[in-house]
Image (cartoon, rainbow, N blue to C red; front, side):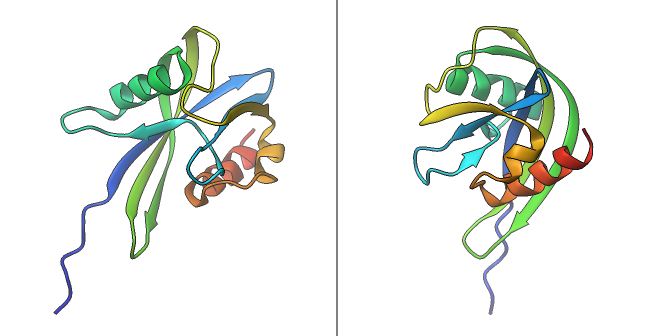
Length: 130
């Protein structure tokens, strides 16, 4: 008998753009790069989740705009749905409050980074849709 499938973790990430570049952040736990964001809390809608996460992780206020993509990752150790949104910076300058470092990179440069798997799929889409 197989165990029932766990519902996927709902995670958000934001695409912040500046001069044709996208903000990426290097995780402290695995040292891989990602688009900044985080896990949805119970009862929280996805846009509110992303705004909260970017406030906590980067010290900025953003306007969450349209959803760009959803990447569904299924693996024995973890199932997740990564909801990617375009965001507009309203106030503050991004700081690495919870990450090792931040970088502004072109979508093509992003593909050359050691990205988290779901973020690699998003980087490919960003590179194709500039």
